[in-house]
Structures are given as structure tokens and as C-alpha cells.
Length: 142
Image (cartoon, rainbow, N blue to C red; front, side, top):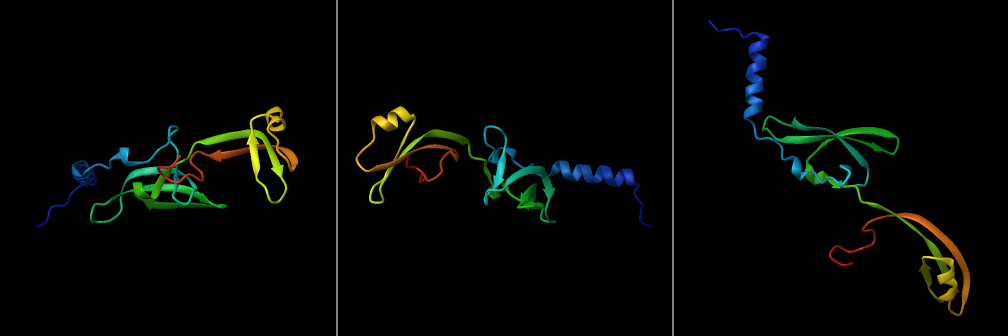
């Protein structure tokens, strides 16, 4: 005759099984200095769970929530599916703009922009924008 286990016995057995499994290495999650991550597509993500057992093979996955335009999404990923949120840098200054055959030069102040002007300047405009650290830079080249 088969023995029947109580709910408490089943739960204790399951907890022992979970404790014996290899734990997910949290150090593999690529957090920035504020603890933020985003998907590789650039969508800010929130980590909901790091110990979800994805399959019977015992693969652990990270469960994340992120917003895709106006839709809230939840998905499974591993640490390779996340990247740290880049640091934002505020840029302020003045831009000397030249005729169509020339370039534009950025300066930290209007005074410097006026001192450094060259022939053909058609405008001197204030510039203020936020950029992500590393934008436009090839890895290994600064």
C-alpha cells in the first residue's frame, strides 16, 4: 500500500530539493552603479525574480518586467539578456555653425565661441542635451 504524504511533508521535501540546487550567481547581472539594468534593446527593466526554475532541466532564469512603448511585458531571460543602464551626461554649450561647405564647432561658453569663430560663421546657437556615456564610441577607442 502506498503511503500518502501530508501537504507539510510535500513542502518540506520540495524545500530540501530547492536548497540542494545550484544557486544563480547574482554577480553575473550587469547592474550600473545605481543598480539599474535594461534590455539589450534599450528598454529599462526591473528584476522581479532571480531563481525561477525555467524547465525540468533545472535551468534558472531571471524574470524581468519592462515597458515596450505602452505595454507592460514580463519575460524570462538570463544575465546575457540584460545590460547596465548607461550613465547620462548633460551637455551645455554653444555651437558655431558655418555655411554648407564647412563644419560646426562646440564651445563651453558663448564668449569662447565668439573668440574662436572662423570665416563663414552663419549662427551661434545654444545647445543643451542629455547623452549616454559611450554613445558613438567604438569599444576600445576613446
